[in-house]
Amino acid sequence: MLSTIHIKNLAVIREIELQFDCGLTVLTGETGAGKSIVMDALQAILGARVSKDLIRADEKSALVEVSFFFSEETVPEALKPYLLDDMLVLSREIFRDGRNLVKINGSLSNTAELRGLAPYLISIHSQNDNQILFRSEEHFRFLDHFAGATERFLEYESCYRRYREISAEILAVDSKKEQDNSRIDYLKFVLSEIEAANLQPGEEDRLKEIKLLLKHQEKNKENIKTATYALYENEESAYHFVSVAAKALKHAEGFSEIAERLDELRYEIAELSEKIRTSDVKAETEYQNIDDLEDRLGLIYQLKMKYGGTVQSVFDTYERTSRELYEIEHREHHLEELVKQQEVCLAQLTKLSRELTVIRSQYAKKLSDCIQAELRDFMMPNAVFIVELKEESDFRAYGRERVEFLFSANLGLPPAPLSKIASGGEISRVNLALKSVLRGIDPACAFVFDEIDTGISGRAAQKTGEKMFAIASDEKHSQVLCVTHLPQIAAMADQHILVTKEEETGETVTGVSGITGEERISEIARMIGGVAVTEITRQSAEEMLSLAEQFKLEY
Image (cartoon, rainbow, N blue to C red; front, side, top):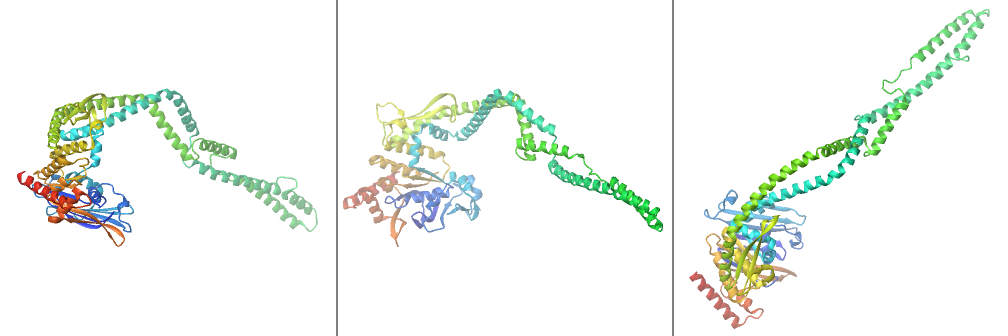
């Protein structure tokens, strides 16, 4: 059972702590007092998304802490690994920057784990549930839940989704067939162009280095040519003039020694010139002609410009084009595989839909009868409730049949879709009837009803209070929390909590307190009469409480 809830810095709540008992607990108070914030806190501890705007102004975070107590007989198997001395304590701190600090019995956890535990802890039913009843496309969920077929439907839903995906892919593959031929020609051209270029990783950088080397080599050639020309290879070379000088001095008296030295110099010049000429070292590369190298670099540049701007993008284009060409050329095979997958999926879908149809057909009448019986308890003796199954021509997201609730509140009126004829009060009672029927298969240890009694009054309100007391007295579900504005329901409570709103130091603060005796009489009198509590409304409240106690004793 839900034992305590501690709320701090959440909206108008500065800090409160509530303790809950078994049986029926009601929360009452003026509109805007903060009852809905208590419901928001319960939603938060069950892992729901919480807006940071709910954090109280000027505070960094909000805190919700809830404790549950379980006896050995009532603890669900799914919760046993989490319990500590039969207790389960959940806490969640919500920060303005979006962070959440979640703990389960003191150990760090996360909101996903809270959502996993939620179905076994609290089942919350609000006014929004009434709106779901107006959407006939959601009615199948109630029937499946009643029939215990929810898991079977989830299998069907997964299979249906896969079937739709495969079918869409088949259509996409078929639609591309007409474009394939022209596309194949283009892809083959791209591949052949890149293959013919035979690009190598790092080739462009290597060629640029060779280009610099060849340019340096060309400069060397010019320098060598100038040097050999000046030394030996023309009529005005050093060799020529030294030879002339040597020859002239040979015939001049007294210069024989100098003539010999010039002769030696002449031979040395010839030797140096030959050595310079033959020492022209060429770079060891496949490119000895810079023009060929420039052509290769030009080809690489053209490919880069066509296919992405870099050599790597050219390689990526080749890989991508190869894959696309392979897929197109093997598309027929892929299509055959998809068709086979579709056939297998269709067979499974057919099997699951038939199983769902059988189960739904078996339980539709049972659910109809159960709801009608509950509606009679809600002062609707002539109400007719029918769970109708309409066969669909094809598979739908909900199966091969559409489930729709038909309803008639009065004798002589044919049942019609619930969304078209039910009033606000009637839809609330239908919703309560559904909750009452489905509670037996709900694993939660506590039920919370958040103002779902909208539109109900008088004797119907009294019956609603009695029904909630009955749910709270159930051996399996011995705890019900109800936020209500109806005095008839408040009078049936085993525990009555009053939510108030006060102003303290210039700010609005919510307070809570358990009330009994005169305080409870005054609150129910206020609910009966509004702002002015008179002696008559107090007497009515006392009588209502007395009748409620008598009902409990006789129940």
